[in-house]
Length: 316
Image (cartoon, rainbow, N blue to C red; front, side, top):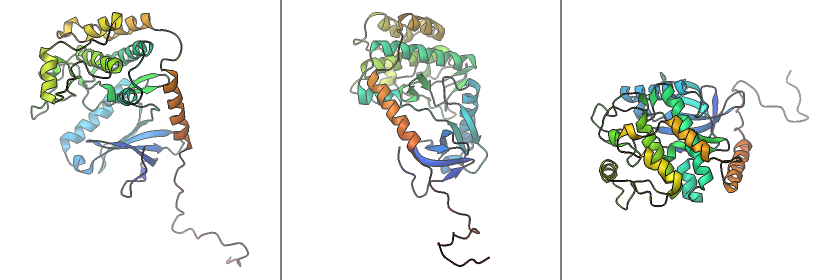
């Protein structure tokens, strides 16, 4: 979380922007607050991308996809402006870091947490698929860990079930290493493709590496291994390895359905917090820090005179 830069907007719609949460190829994400005091995340796309009709349409589709799924397992969409000069969308702020950052900073997750992660992701995919969508980009950086469970974000490339994964230029859309073989080949996708990505994401959480990661991390090399080679699951064992192996089957028809994954994970789950104590402590500290961020002082209106110093004669 960084301070606003001089050229960053201070207000978008009804939201006062407080900090920069991140930036990427699509644009910037800001921490903001509504007039009612609700903390939100506001995504503002790059001005040059706003000039591209295809990209603007993709942004509109992302918002529509997130609205169809709802907010239980995702960030709820609160407001948006897709027709303005620079489109933006406001979602509920999710107080939790990406799974990718958690594993990078704290190490691999314990088995109890992995089963709860599997259940949460499976329930999220169930909601997504029941809405008639395939996420197409489930990966560690698109999973946020909250005290209550995982949340799936970023519907930027979500499509209706059966939709193509090729752009109009013929490029495959997705994240190498977490894409299913059929996604790599540019075929039409169904929910089984997201199940493959779930298995790859679980592998990362359990081992610190994706199932097809090697020293050669080039995109084309990753995609070749996804299609032609077995996953590297040597650090997984027992029922968890069996579940991940099933999710990573090359044949989509051999993968379990998300509801089956959720049931299997629930059978191995335990009561109590799903995250280790040190991660819960960090999340609580981050939440306290978030709530302590104060809004910048509002500048007085131009036609409002400054208050008179004590003892000054009245002008009335």
